[in-house]
Image (tube, rainbow, N blue to C red):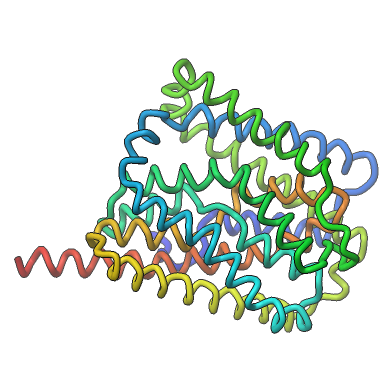
Length: 333
């Protein structure tokens, strides 16, 4: 019997298990430093594979559908951050400045890739456009996410510990050396390695997920060792869940309304909704480790973990609804 689409998948369950393990048995001392070094190397390898897998021809062809991609990018890097700023005065007094940085980080992240494409396919949407749009969003995020975070943090006078220290130049260097440079190297090697990476995607996926799990375990262990979770309670988690629900509802509603006002076809609307409303955990956690080096990463990634799970459940239900509507329309035609 298959698991209903709105329930957590195996990776989310394993991710939750890593968090629990970190809370019960956090890694510390020299082993923690070794894990940090290993995960940095893993993150660089992960982005090298992303660069090698992404077909330049697909991106060039996808750019022809510029109105769709512009709609997704404007939502991902415009509407989301503006909504985060609008919620800041109401949210920060309840969750504190550290988690507020994590909330703004969610708003600055790129879209997901795999799940955006999967849900678009399930909903009978424009899969080719979703592939290009999600890929373009992630490539742009390597540059735009750090810039947005620097602007948001400095503009609000916030630091990850509430003291206004902001993002350092070393964070930018980390993004270049561990994310951008490996991605560019992967793109250069794409003509030779691209086919191999795509053919062995099923084998490489556990490696990708393993790197993410290791980063999460290390980040939550560090927060546990520092005693940062003592300030959290069920009330804070409930507030993060409510915030995620409100944010997702606002963005999805705006995307559906905007797609129809702009005259997009139904298949394009589906691609816009699923690519424009999602935020990546896969790239977000490694990026947080680099951007917020020396800061409480375990707390900072908590909002994206909550938002990620909620978006998967909501998008699964919405994709099934789109699919049923398509089947009904085909039957009546």
